[in-house]
Amino acid sequence: MRVTALFVAAGLVFACAAPASAQAWLPPKGEASFSLGFSRNSAGHHINYLGEDVSPGAMEWHQFVPDLGYSITDRLAIRLGAPPYVFSRYKGATPHPALPGQPVYDDGNWHGAFQDLRAELRWKATTGSLVVTPLVAIVAPASGYAQLAHSAHGRHLFEGQLGVNVGRLLDPLLPNAFVEGRYAYTVAERVLDTMHDRSNAALDVGYLVTSALTVSALGAWQKSHGGWRATVDFPAPTHPNFRFHDQLERTDYFRVGATASYALTGSVDVGASWFKTVKARSDVDMSGLALGLTYNFSPSQLIKKKKGPRT
Image 1 (cartoon, rainbow, N blue to C red):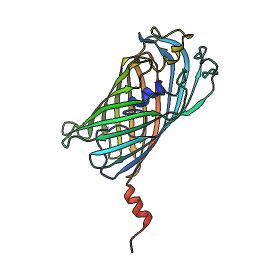
Image 2: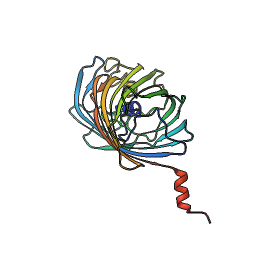
Image 3: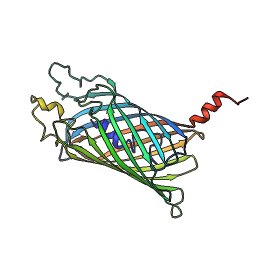
Image 4: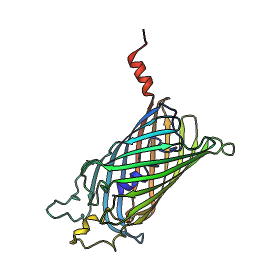
């Protein structure tokens, strides 16, 4: 569950280290990009609804995250986040109770599975110095991965998102600096007829150190609307509805982080990012590191090169 929440919120900020920021600005018409990121997220405690550390245990998630984007026009772009492959494990004295007839998932071993598919459409609504780019997205599980475990791969829910990216260069006050804000509201698939939607917001303040190097500081917030507080609203482990408590957890958090990206060539960027949880409720004390590589290209130009000159 925590991996899904992180990937969706920080799908705007952290998930792929190669420049996932600057979502308000779109590439030129006909330009495509392919990104491949690797991230390592970890946590040592669960956090209850009061913000207190409880139930210690080492949780770890390794993700391989592919992403493909394409600008249909100068103002309309699509992104397809192929399902990340996630390796996870839990090592501790309190493994999650297994469902009847199933083995314990938190057995100290690594388990891997494909997670969720994400498709996103962005439209640049303005043409001035203030860039406003609304977005719509859908998220769908790509496999029957485990969602009931300390080391679960995700929440295994269908979701729809509606949001907006707003960005502005800070010149002439601060040449080479920019600020970007993001907000998204997620409508999650109902479980037990219970609403558990959420709001995610992020702020990114960046600076172009050179024409190739960009650094930024990040903040990300999540506020859940509905759901169950950990652990006071959870049914007893013997109750049939206990299996849904991870999906319905009312997770709130504030996280901070930093990114750096470098353009190796005109078409290849590399990047790194870091984040840490500052405050959370009904969550885990997650922190993480990520690395990524992005290749920017024009499909039409590649086709022309492959065909060669006309005779």
